[in-house]
Amino acid sequence: MIKKIIGWLLLAIGVLAIVWGTWQSYQIFTNQAPSPAIFKMGAEQGIILPQKAAQTQDELIGQQLQQLLQEQLGKMIPVDTIAKLLNLTVWSLFVGILVLASSKIATIGIQLLNTKTDKAV
Image 1 (cartoon, rainbow, N blue to C red):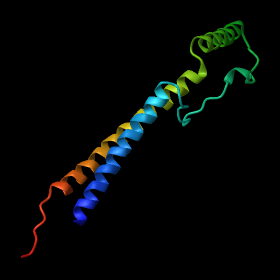
Image 2 (spheres, rainbow, N blue to C red):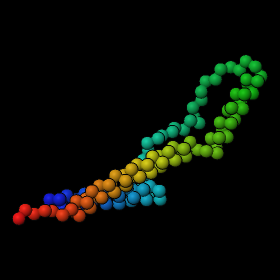
Image 3 (cartoon, rainbow, N blue to C red):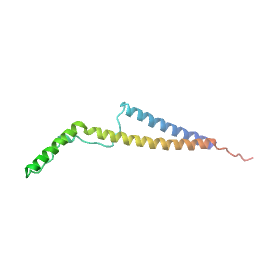
């Protein structure tokens, strides 16, 4: 009798964890809930790093080219896009692990429900 109760409890916990993880993923990927912020990238455009004075014309041109390239890349790929992609990837990995672990818990519960109890006569 106790095996049946534990089996049903484990089965319920496993199924509820899978449903919760799936529902949270649906909420996050349909933009109804914010994604967990594990990775954060600040707006680096407002930060000006001190640069050493250019010695030659080539160094000056190199610095200007590097600054122009950074500005153009910043316009093409916003800084927050990379952080959001990393956060969604980490969330997907977490939910994948949660589903695998929950299915194992539910399987143990099913095995407990299927065991035959030997009654002493």
